[in-house]
Length: 163
Image (cartoon, rainbow, N blue to C red):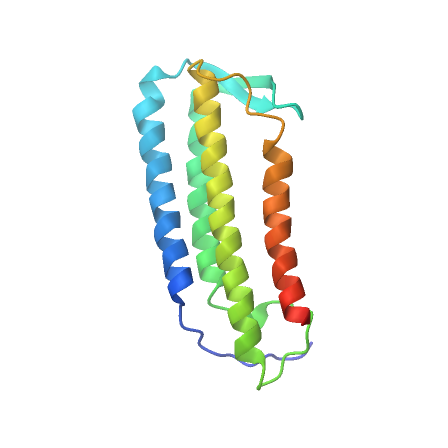
C-alpha cells in the first residue's frame, strides 16, 4: 500500500453550507419528533414493502432511531473528512495532484452526508404522517429515487475524477 501525502484541506463555502443545512435538518428532525410524540399512537408502521405499504409494526419509540442514526452518520462523515489520505482513489495520487483529488473526495462526502440526512428526515416525516393518518404508506418511489440520487452523485464525481 502506497502512503498518500497528508494535507490539510480547508473547508469550502459549499461544505460549510452543507454543514449548516445538515445541522438544521438534524435539529428539525429531533424537534418534529418531540412535537409529534404525544399525537402518535403507541404502535405505528415501522416497515414498508417495495410498494411503500406498511407491512411491519412496532413501538413509536423506534422513530427516535432515525434522528439518532442521522446524528451518528453526520458525526462520522464529518470526522472522516479529516483523513482524505486514507481514502481509496481510482486515480494515482501524487504530491502534485493530491490536493485536487482530496478536495473532490471531500466534496463528494459532503454531498452524500447531506443527501443521507435529507433521505432519513424524509422517511421520519413520512412515517409520522402515516402514523397520524395523514398519508397511507411512504410511496413506492422513495427507495428508487433515494438510490438514484446517491448513485448519481457518486457517478458524477467518479466521472469528474476520470477527466
